[in-house]
Length: 309
Image 1 (cartoon, rainbow, N blue to C red):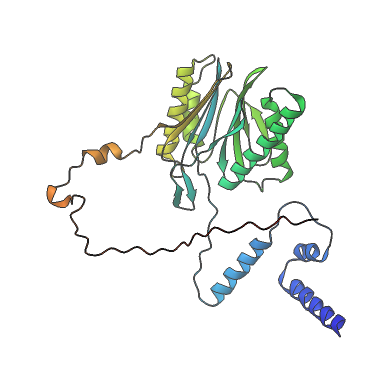
Image 2 (tube, rainbow, N blue to C red):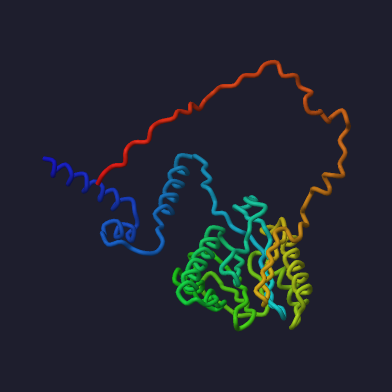
């Protein structure tokens, strides 16, 4: 009897899978062998829920994926590489984060700027960073920029664009300064300067009109700053502040959060003087009664004897 009950439940479960899920989901559910890659079950679930809500006349807005919107750029100068990025992350038409850090650590001599889906760009940086850490421990040598580029583009190509990460990798190794831009489908270019993201058209116009070979560090930083500001002011997906990272051939790295803050309202707010009548000094409100409720009871207990195995 017990076996009959279990068999009936399993048949019912398989019938539910057969009726509700697409063919490839059914094959994965009935196949005991684990499958690699992405899992799209939640996508089909969300689509089914939205259809049910529409049929009942209920308006439902499921959470949207947070995007970095983004203007990122990079350029090679005679003594190193400069990377720049804005700090706005968006969720649809809403600003989700005003101070998002888009230039991430890859290795002590390599950094990466990311545009696209925020979670995808952060995870790709963490993935290649951990792999390069293991490679340095294994070989005892400095990480190469081309190695980071190869790992990233192979990973993106493997997933055929489903990882929404457009990346700029810049760094300095024993062969000199290098800059690569990597597209979400896995193609990459080695370039002297580049921009990525929704504000890249505005930024590339600045870089194409300003860039010259063998620039000084000051010229490269100024160009990267102006390129990011052009994206901030001409692209709705980019905004807030400008971050700058400088990777030098000497091995020194300078990371500056908020290198330029064009939208900082503090100076404007400090100029506003409210009437004295509206400024209530501390302690003006009389405290009529106060009480304290003890909600934590601390007791000393004897630790149990360790279990013998």
